[in-house]
Length: 476
Image 1 (cartoon, rainbow, N blue to C red):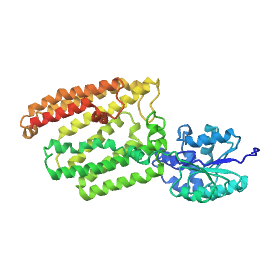
Image 2: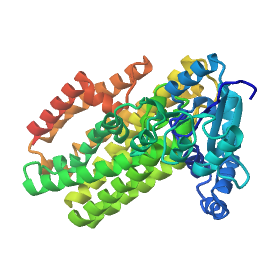
Image 3: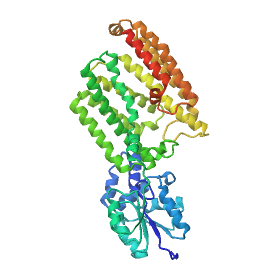
Image 4: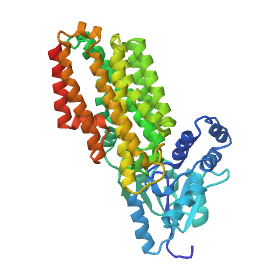
């Protein structure tokens, strides 16, 4: 440090990086070693620095796709132009800090956690004072731990401060600049909870429709409660899934903008909220609905967790799991309302939702193939050359669902439910048209949504759905 200018010292977690590397490595560890969860606690028993070192060595973090704070990078670049030395000082492990410094090429020196020294709060302050003297450096930070460092800094730069930090930093009288670069947390939480995906939970009401109990007020109330608790559980699952999929999402052209992958929501907030939603779902269902619904909800959660951790990377198993997750919604509706499920509705559901799950995979692989990729797609068990086989299986599965509907018309139980069951035949060609249209649009590259969400937004699908509903009503 031969420059006469005092160095600009920059914190990493929450400041330069819109994330926390301890949590990043912890989640990565859980994702790749779910059966060795006791080991991090063994590391922690020897100190937080040992834990950070263990996690850093046991995981691979791609620093090129981490969510960096562009406003902080611009500040660094501005100061570098003026000849100031730039120092990265972080409580994260030295190996990760050095990888980030090598990637960004913005720092003259890196000071970080190593050995048994956890370089946070007063330990970071002492290290900086020893090197540069009291007031001999400016410091860029964001958290409660940075208050101690700002006390001995010449100037303080406050970035997206945690609750209460801004006031305490201003009280010290050396704040040079406050940088706010976070987006609206309300909007980001709506995206993270994926409230629009709750539309899928309407399947819970399907047994109510097929049993002709739509006018029963008590059953309608129970269906509404089941819809709410299933939605809370599903949102909890979405949060957990996004946390576990951080690495894969950041390599995806659109998923990298998800709230946690982009750093717009903190990983810690997700780790707090997802179990709260899950607890609310199970406590509410246990108190207000039959035990069988709570058991079904538990099966849904267990299958979703298995899908996130393992099944989504297994060829064919992943789409069968997705079809099951849709079918479980129908089973949940039947258990909540104490209605009997028929073979026909379960068979129709499995074949139809298997077809739609394969639509999702086809759309992903088609995009990968058009980009010229030939290797297995990231986080999946398929190659782009599997397109033809997937389309064949998907269309066949959709047509089998229509065949199940046709066979349902001749079931003796159907004649007891409908005055004119033969009218239901009119629904078969319309459903054949819809399945064929969905696959043709996917083949042409026009399927950019989950196919169920697409159907809710698609005018043709909505009209067909209304007409098919009318057919069943007339048959009744």
